[in-house]
Image (cartoon, rainbow, N blue to C red; front, side, top):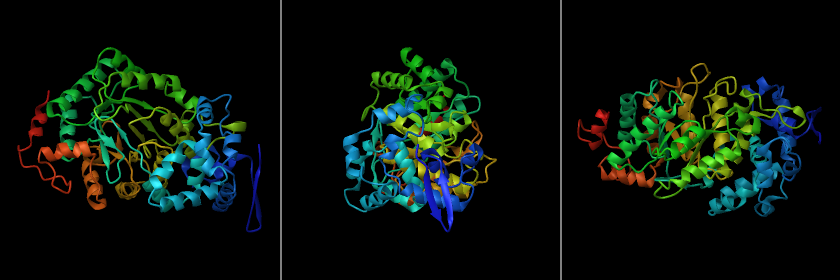
Length: 470
């Protein structure tokens, strides 16, 4: 294990191995301070970033941040690494990779070049380069990349911004869920997925919610997909029982130990993927996995230690979760960026930075990446911060965002985006819904020629009948 030394303004900074260097180079966030791995000063952070920029990319293949022998996520990263795709950039340092990415992003064939090199990038390489990039760098490169996935709609196409319609209810009341679903559909939301966080993980309750959403979809011939965000084992059981499952959901993390805390491993996730695909319910594609991540999940599970027993910074561990996601070829991946709380991302500035990092890293690794633009009520953040992050993500080509009635999730007790926020982003950034969903909206007379949602006249929409569902 190498030490890294950097001189800065007459002071010598020593970093004890790659794990320590990555942590110290990370922009300030409360989770790393909680873990005891953050830089002690802005000067130390700058020195670490300077030293990290000179690290050759090949080092990340020789010095795993989490031991290969004890962690299946590390084994997945190393064993599936595409050396051929890596060859084009294998001579670069982390700083050289930043310069190369920005140069590629300025070229007309950027999407094809980034797509070709993506299998040669490891999460640790991508996390490292993000640490020495400004916000505008993260936006520029992410926008240049194109990653699409499809089931009944296609997400990730350039010029589009899809939405997850999240009609949660504290007691899973079908009437409340139907009302929230109606609200979102009338405002042009739901093209990524109509996804419910259930109040319980009861198989019976989950099946009832799946049936409700499927009845609504079939009744109005809506080109979208539904998901009840139960544990993958619950969903596999429901698939075997014949429930109308579209997408298979699971929260994932960047270490074997953190995934064990979620009750999953890579083998189980692959089983869920195969089970979902076996139903063949997609119409324009067969991507069936919906995966959620979040900075701080490994630390909260006490599964954040890496090589030499040192704490790995939360952003690097977050990016390692994208290796698990990439293995499953998902329809949707999103980071619930501010959901875990201020213990991990303290304020609006940290949440905005983390959201841009996660989106950049996921997209560069080949994922149809979305973001839950959100915060908890005890964080030093507000809706102005969310407006800023939403706008930046729209500029960066984010695949989808999550929207709830009034931006207030009354079941999970946190603040996200509203359906109107999605309309704002589409309008000011000239973005449109997923094409299949947009065609459906147009067929119902709900949008104009520019894709803008029209005002709803009282009782005029055929969707109004949904208000009386169940």
